Length: 348
Image (cartoon, rainbow, N blue to C red; front, side, top):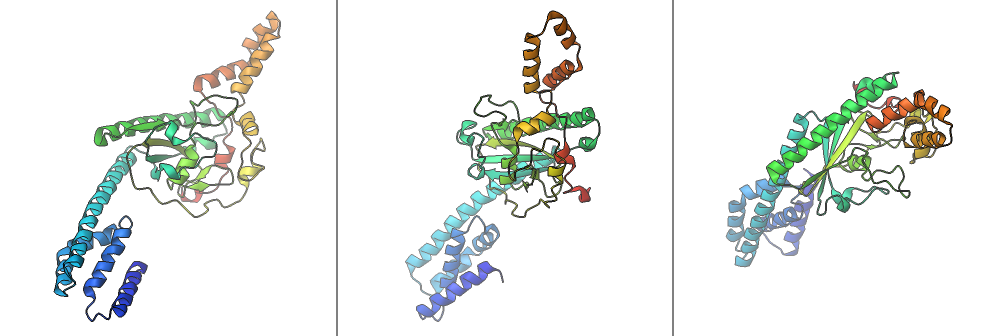
């Protein structure tokens, strides 16, 4: 017998003793109904059973002469349960329809979270992106084995392939939600574009990691990345925010990190020295050596150089790499924290 059944049965027995009722079957049914009314969202299956047997229970209430008021309460409770069950069933069917569509696109996993369960200490509030938003839909994409390649070109090419697929899926899901449910939906950036300011240097407007954890797709590891229960750290994330009200998925309570510290030991920038924090400056220096900082440095040096030196700078490999990084948007030269994590590799 489940805990739910034990609890309401015990309560019914106590009520029966207090009121000295020889026949308190109807009272038991009524208490069960009230219990179901409170826990309707978590007890859809039981509610269906109750709704199916409503005529029998109402007849029992009248049979034991509990009075018209009590019988009316029983009927009223069934009416509320029927309405709530119908609403909950529609939400469930809507969510599962969305889930099926997402997975059929080739997305490896999807999770749903309430907006109020998203807690990112440095990112903007969800209201800034879509006023009236209710649900975050988080998508997980398995990283390609390209990330293991000793060639940074191949590793980055695999990441770009995944990024293009992520954007395509997000766009199609957005159109699907609009077409099928007339929902307002926005796609959240993978990382960039982001608002640029001195106060928030290197901080994305929206945290894909915190959204994924809130949606039950994983937990944070020692490297401060999300660890998925099947794919480990080797995932890319995307998310959509919508005004549809969908039931959230359960968060993962288990700590998926095995605390081997391989990510810490294999970080060339020593950016993971402090638990729970990534030193962004140290990380970017090694992972994006030809990003904005290098670009600024190049032009500062260019401004103070002679015409002959400037000509040489334009044919230098550093300048070519800076230009390539610009054309890509963000070029990574280090994937150590991803490829050194052993979680999930045994399932491959």
